[in-house]
Image (cartoon, rainbow, N blue to C red):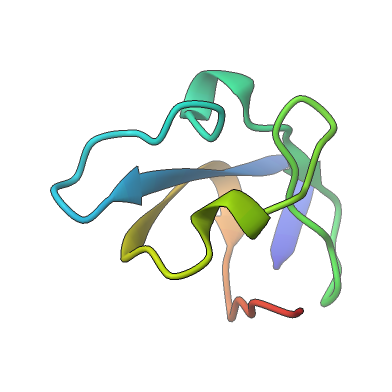
Length: 75
């Protein structure tokens, strides 16, 4: 992502029907700031996604003064 001096990005995880998954809502998503190509996403300081394994999910990106170029899931 490429963020300006005040830029930030949050990632919310939604279920297949578009509802926020408990524990991964925008309200608990930690802000990603600064420029970088390998910034881990977290919610309340926790980045474990193992409880979502095998589920269909959607991502909602919310930000200000930021450009998102790519994202990746890693095991």
